[in-house]
Length: 175
Image (tube, rainbow, N blue to C red; front, side, top):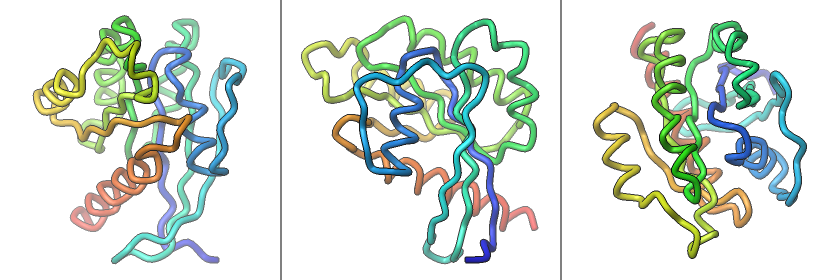
């Protein structure tokens, strides 16, 4: 398949929020309990068919969330068409850090679309960040928002499709 569009999507967020699990759930429809922390960046690709646009090849950049990689962020973000900023719904700390990730992405890519992802919705009894808190943050900061579970697959495909459509809409509006 010759992709009509090639897009670059970055996954951003603190370590252990489930970025790698989300990508593998999307690409292979699989979930593993234990991934090693991503060091630097993990590059993956998925070809999809998007209504109105046809064949799209998504290059997915899964960025390591450790503070030690912060200096490399702007390099990884170069050329990105959109991003997911992921936090763990069971961890207030990861939610408090999303500002930094949104800021870094906007510094690099200004008006490229961002979707906020609250991951690990399957851990219902441990949830500390409600969907309404998340939605309020997203609305205030002009972000899309999706609640996911990489473990069950809840909304993972939908999140990637939604971001891809936002990116393609933006590309076609600017051409």
